[in-house]
Amino acid sequence: MWRRLTFGAALLTAALSEARGESFVGRWSIDPAGCASEGNTAATAPLIATATSVRWFAAECKFARMYKVGHTVHIQARCTNEGRVVSTPITLEARGDRLRVTWDGVRVQDMRRCR
Image (tube, rainbow, N blue to C red; front, side, top):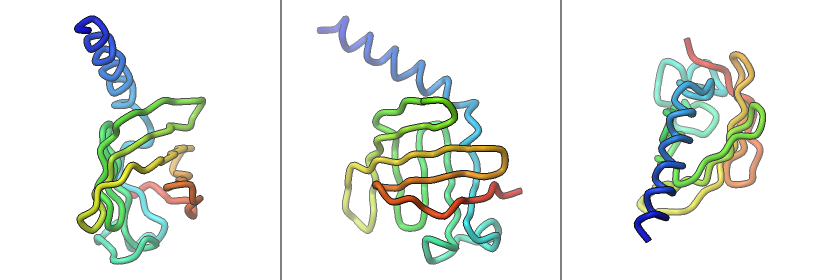
């Protein structure tokens, strides 16, 4: 049993270590105004991604599982949204200063990296 737990922890640690250098980490926004403020809609709120979490609009999410295929990072996250905790699939594909986001199965308008 301990061997499985240790192996699982090692895999998660390796995945998170690899993600630390990922290009999706940073502050992104659909509307450039979201780079300077917190915004109050999905279009104006910035998406803030770290190697282990993402925050966007009303949701704060911690990564439960993550894997990468090419430039795309597939995440299964535990998100707190208006007091509820839900499992949410998130896909992030960073290409230069643009981020393609799919949130809970819904494709979102491309975001731009905040400077």
